[in-house]
Amino acid sequence: VSGAPVVVLAGGTGGAKLARGMLDVAGDDLVVVANTADDVEVHGAHVSPDPDLVTYWLADRIDERGWGLRDDTFAVMDGLRELGEDVWFNLGDRDLAVCLQRAERLAAGRRLTDSLRELGRAFGVRGHVLPMTDDPVRTRVKAEGTWWPFQEFMIRRRGQGPVEDVAFDGIEHAAVPPEVLEAVAGARALVIGPSNPVISIGPILAVPGMREALAAAAAPVVAVSPIVDGAVLKGPTEAFLAWAGQTMDAPGIAATYGSLLDGVVTDEDVELPVPALRTDTLMADAEGRARVARETLDFALALAR
Ligand code: GDP
Image (cartoon, rainbow, N blue to C red; front, side, top):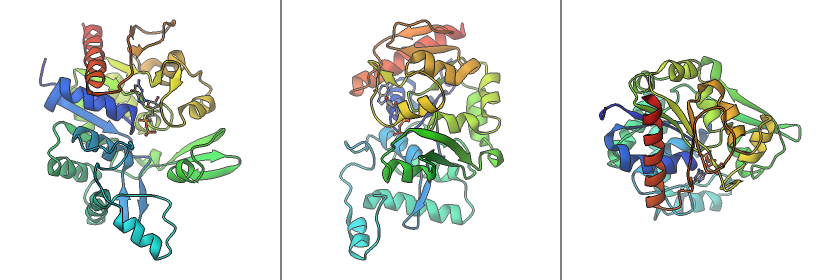
């Protein structure tokens, strides 16, 4: 049933790469639901790191460093440093333009959903990037007895565990946007991207009503494991899995999602509680991204039968 959405839940790196591959496979039917609990207000701008990373990937404008826009300049950050500002959060000039426009839109009462749609149009992106919620949710992480706002934990503390606690401030007052509910209900496949299951996918699933919407949807829910060759490719996934009491393998990933899952895509040859597709899950280049996306979608559609 072409025309029905293929929904990908995503954080910033693994999920974004899968989303880019899925764009080759699903085209305009692609709907990405991105984590917004990493959002941060800096330099008068509203930064939405995960939705923006996904948009930059879909626009083929992601920089090689893994964040920000290719060929961006950093004149404003240099200027702020010259003025004596503590620039702990780096943003390129054009990236800053995106986030300044967003801050203006939000201050004028517009929704994050609308701001992301406007950005997608301006960048000529096919597919849709939706936020998990339009309400403010902020991840905090406790390490060595101190609670850190998420970006400060990642940048100032370099994401260093052991993680003692995790909180999603505001989550109980957050709602799933109607656009997300509609896409999930009408989807032909629901894919949990290979992102950090605790701090990238965790907040998405914690928005009140999200788990219920995914469980009630007719489409199967499949997760792509973020563990490749027994290791994490980027970021502190291991420390957060340890805090969640899960093992650093596909069964640990599957356990964090529990009864929501209908299938898992992994490169590990292990016992799993749900059907598994065993394949190389490394998405090193465009071909790899499209291959993993195609195999994941075919696997999900076969489960639906
Ligand atoms: P962040 O928001 O930038 O920290 O990124 P995510 O939470 O989206 O992604 C981090 C996870 O992506 C890590 O656990 C990585 O192992 C995983 N990841 C990165 N690249 C790949 C890939 O090519 N394949 C798979 N399966 N996982 C990947």
